[in-house]
Image (spheres, rainbow, N blue to C red):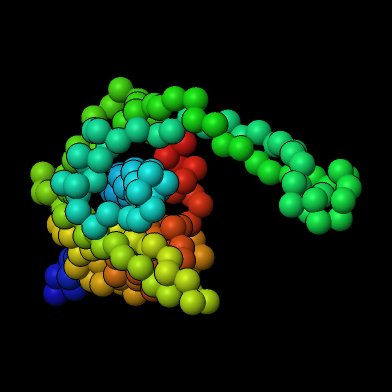
Length: 219
């Protein structure tokens, strides 16, 4: 009987030890995998932001269609300009006062040529052709893209937002930890249910990720 009790106690100890180990190891493993996936998603969201800002510069608005955005990158060009300050006589004022001492200062913008948007922002890479989805562990995760205008101080301002669901990115990981991750509110975390860049309600082209992910992408 004593031997049986000892055996049962050892089983309980081993079981509790395993549970304790797993309670520490599982979140650590989850966080490591989460950061790898988030880094990949964030790099793509930054590519989308770069493409959208180029579209804004050339057309004056953002784009809500990935197909249209890809066509834009393939065909659009940036104008290469040169800014020159100039000064010339203010003829009307000089005539009105009968003098020659009034001048007008102005700025002249000269167009020197054009350069391909694709070459300027993506070089020799064609990764921009697959901005609409991200492959995560064999699953294609969709990117949601919106664009439009909001009013600020009686001015119509272009805005855009690209986002990816955390549920999609972490689809095969521990569900309890995924739920906790979606509730994250921390300066060191990606807060909310989605990883996003830009905003449809504010004039903002930043991402909702902390600086550590920007540094990870630079390495």
